[in-house]
Length: 168
Image (tube, rainbow, N blue to C red):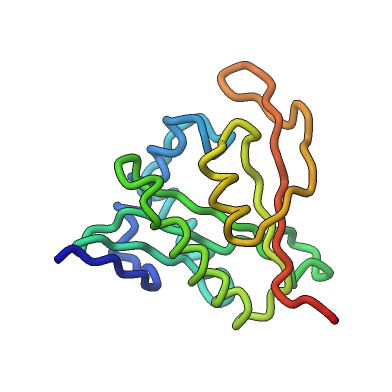
């Protein structure tokens, strides 16, 4: 029987995390990054994601097929309660429920680490990603027009958010 497992990432997962991130860069659907990253970049990134800024992985039959991270939104102290979110799924596993499970678990880590809000950026044309986020309680905040360039062309970026602790 094939099983999905979500767990905290370890340094031993870096190669898999890197490969999945580079797929996202190559596919041009999840980030404005255009140059693939190397192992040194990812190791440095991983070391910045300790304490409150967690990285989790989704395993399927013992193989890492996706990951999610809580990232620093802004280095100003007034934004300590806001986490930026990244979610990346291996190409052949997209749309199969891994993103939803990762979101559920990373949200729990966010609450445990006293974040009150999660924000993310996505491309307006990334319908699969938007569907995942909306299904999990994120709302569209707005669209930045011509926010960055992707392969020499300006692209818009949609901002979404989820409040973790709603006041009555």
